[in-house]
Image 1 (spheres, rainbow, N blue to C red):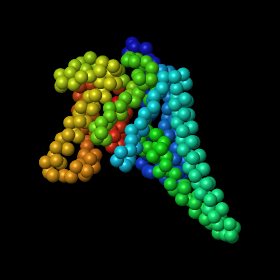
Image 2 (cartoon, rainbow, N blue to C red):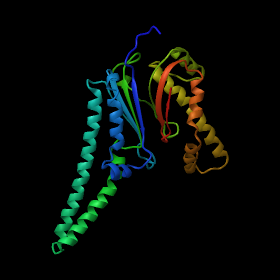
Image 3 (cartoon, one colour):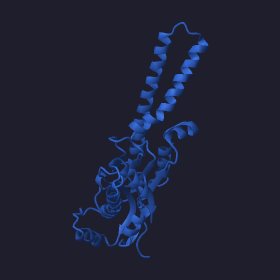
Image 4 (cartoon, rainbow, N blue to C red):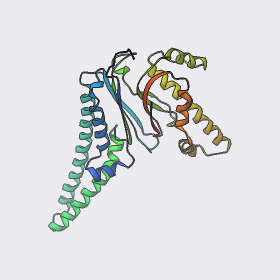
Length: 284
């Protein structure tokens, strides 16, 4: 092996298996997953000389609510600036919720001046408990990185753009969660030129940006095919439209999709990503 060794891109993925309320009760914070992501990325800090990106997928969001988020930066000390900025935003949400709780307590005290001390303390405890139970829902709805799937990337650029637009994760958005895709990785595809022409031969119009974009589009193509096959089958069977996304999400086989993509990849890679329905993956 004659090529020089470098500290190339680092990646991290956290998948929470329980709701945010569990982590608040057990660890005292809804940020437990985000803190684990920060720690994993900090351990690879030497790999992030050219930029940092983080992503989040929230599960079971109400229709009309956003569920996929990312933040990227190529500034100096980008890891600290990106993560600490999100922690500050979380703090604002937490303080606003506490102010709302305290205002309700003060109002109750003002409306019931004749209550005994014990009765007042009991009511205050009830209000505090109710707000604590409601806080995880506030975090999930209002904190962009308050989801169950968290990804991080530290960029050591070897090709493509520099600046925040060249930072991972890359995202492919549609209004179908099972077609929406977020990808990041550490790779150098030796046949990126051939892969782009493979996309063109299908009639696609790839943007010749980086091998990351090429990988994203290749996975996206096979994801579309898998999604559409299930959709057409369910439509022929007369399945109600609003029931179809759940069926597709349940039956979509992301391992099969990735296996089909990997047949034409040549080079070294470590890739992590998530589909909009929450199916996460890591491969190399």
